[in-house]
View (tube, rainbow, N blue to C red):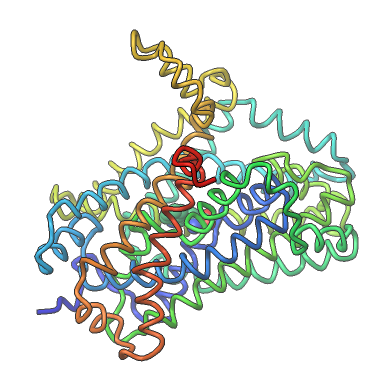
Length: 482
Ligand code: TRP
């Protein structure tokens, strides 16, 4: 009964899967998003909650995603439909796949814009633009760049072309070879950056900031902070939209899902921590603001590169690797959509990847304009422009609507759609899927490991996501629990 191969191809080895999944997980989320989000919520307390989310929610859900993908061997929509049918459950489970497709479009649209920043910074670093600059100059440089829609558009377009090129060729051949040396190289460079930060930056302050939880700052907006830590875990591990699911669908049956997951999640977390250790010592040594938002690494790292010997070389290399990290993540966002178009619209892979790429590209234009020309356009202002409905006072109380396209897409995917997708995956894997199916597919016996997973996926992961949601919307206050 079990399907042993995907029509889209298979990973050649277990290592190829681990590298590809790590390539998906390790990306801008680790080096760009993690430090600035941790900075916005005061450091150590956020990091602690983040680590708990990775261990208690992220790892079991990643196992579930790989497991479902490998059992279904199709795009997330069709995998969910087929598995639900096999288990005698509602076909509505395929909606989970649909939400994943939408999340994928939204994430990649802003992801590509940020990846464009990293490409531009390769050239800036190489040409020595950073030599001797201080915090204020780095800040100005960044603001000038982000304020220029034409440049942003050019880089965004280049990144989308790169992503489509790989996906059009099929993931197995091009990608496998690329990640094999890119991931180790990124690691080495990150370690060089940490060593530099340890010498030239205020390493003590950086360490304390990351690892000494200070809940006093965190407490002021704990609901939002915890939601952001959980959202960051989903985003960084590529969970909740079917990317890891489809990568699992190309994985051979003999490979251990539990072991692979621990390796992937461990590497992803290590890279995030290393990024924090490379960035915060520089932030503190130069009197910069850790909570300054999405520009953080673009305002801090140039200072470091501008000071260190061979800074132009290291800087260019670093941003090149960041581009590659973003690239291996970007393709994993495009792959589920493309696979679905191939399966259901019987398009060729080339056409399917171009079609999905162009759609993402268009959405990305809205994102990059929201940084400059449309900086006054927020979701709130768009809703308020709707006759009648928009006049309701209700909208202005939803503070998260007060964001432009890029920030809103980032917020709503990481903090709402991915956790919701993860919640549904957990419920499906833990409750809808029969125990015998998950025992069979995880193939780890029914010992302690399996029982721990089964407990986490049935109870802890869904309840934790639900509680965090409730806490974030303040619902606990309404029902008088707090
Ligand atoms: N995890 C990637 C990063 O940290 C981004 C990413 C790739 C992603 N695929 C995903 C995020 C799927 C959510 C879902 O940069």
